[in-house]
Length: 306
Image (cartoon, rainbow, N blue to C red; front, side, top):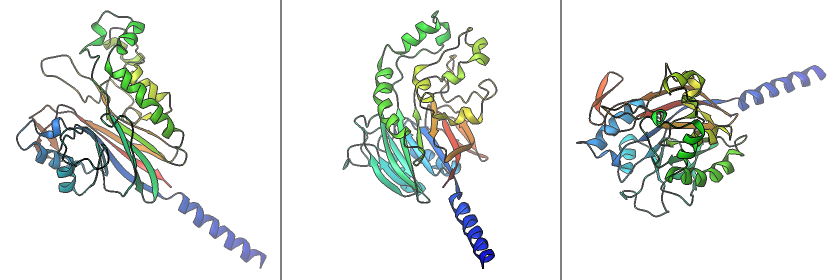
């Protein structure tokens, strides 16, 4: 009888352990679609085509500007507009939005909906906090390494205009959710309009005039133990620059769009960026689609352990 009890206990333990280790793979997309994707002919339709080809499960969108619900409905997503509750879903003044193939939970409203907002999303009954984000582009310089400034002077210059105030407003909100990540994973993504400190390190100083710059706008999130998923999967910024911003005829290549995450329950397993120029064809899965934005796309695949 004792042996039977031990056998049943062992089987129960194994079943419970396996249940606890149930995993789900899902894909997150961060994309600034530029003015609701309306700057080229049939732009929203091209955005729909791109989304269908990349097939993300969750989209954290910037510059939604009235096109979000149309795109979400065409692609079969639940849609959340980051604005005061009751705002018309086609309101062309609203910047941020979140799309999900999974069910939504509670809203996560902030005091700064134009550049930060979130939503609970349930992925196979596991709650995950998702945030969509945008930071102002100022101060901006196409080639900061040529400004003739020291590292300390560049860091002071970085704090001279609008972006730093946004970062400092966002930080307490993200800190609040970052401390919950043992139980509720956190994914935070968007257009931060800042180069990454991870792309301005020892191994890139030769292309940055000898400078190693811990850019505040990205370093502050690493200090919260949040992980830059693209750079985690693609650790070499020389061979995998991940450029999401470029201007023809200028030396203006930067990675400024990001997907960050934090939780022992989450692991990034693949991440890729797509760069294209406004109005030019982007090739995805062998199909050429006219690109409706001036920002590239970041995609990260995650494994969620429950």
